[in-house]
Length: 323
Ligand code: FAD
Image (cartoon, rainbow, N blue to C red):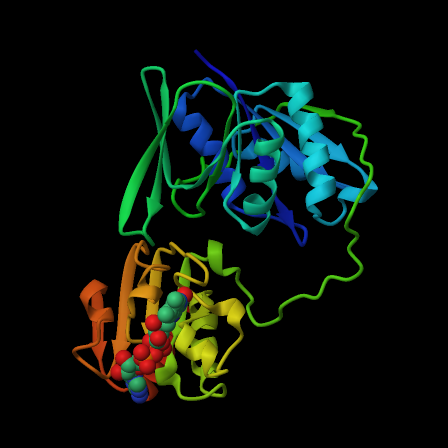
């Protein structure tokens, strides 16, 4: 039987997080007849509803309020609670982004229920909706079966393909007036991190550097390669600890978890804590001068060599090919 689901569309800096569309596809993969209500929270949410329809939403509900201009847990959770009370969906999904991780557990607990965090796939078997999620830093997967009650879940980016974009799709757009009060937080200033152009957690290609880079200046080599590939730049904690780059770039157990199509690991050893954050990448290329480096054990392709020789050659060859 088809069910109604809410997918919270996340917009950052005027652009959708792609995982919002992957969440729509997740609902449709459970049952293509499921109704997806795309919920947009913010202020002046102009034409974003059209993009949600193009990726498969059946309806869009806009909630506009001055207090929703910037994300705050207080304001967003109050608004989303009122949406849930008015829509009474079976489930609420959003991306496992920094906002998703903050907002959805809060709202789930207000609704007196739990949350499946960071799932990578979902299926329905009989009466059960079964979510699969990585545990033990990606070394094992657990299945969580939900049989009744409202479902709240956050989807790890880059694991479920979004539906093909179809601009001819359309649907009803409605609005909901919400009452937001007693805010405990106000945003005075947003300081943007300028170290990375492409968002790491959603990047399709990542060039990641380790202590082998030897200096902050040498990270420019990775920036050049990343620019040619349209990639994001990541790093090991070794590189961050050595102050070669900002901690915002750290990938691993205590950094970001990424699942790009292509992960190029440069001058990093492949410590277990690093691998925990990138082992689910579809294709892993390792460049390291030590043939015994752990990273080669999980790499699909390896280049044993000095990165200071290999990277400029690779960048130039790709520039000839791609640019
Ligand atoms: P190294 O281990 O020093 O490796 C440098 C590599 O560069 C070597 O393999 C070397 O052969 C190669 N190299 C050197 N020069 C060249 C050259 N010219 N050309 C080619 N290759 C070269 N680490 C993370 O990354 N992410 C985490 O989230 C994380 N969380 C942690 C949590 C805890 C609780 C702990 C204890 C540790 C954590 N670590 C994490 C740290 C982790 O254990 C490693 O210390 C770290 O990943 C090592 O960084 P690295 O690979 O850059 O450095």
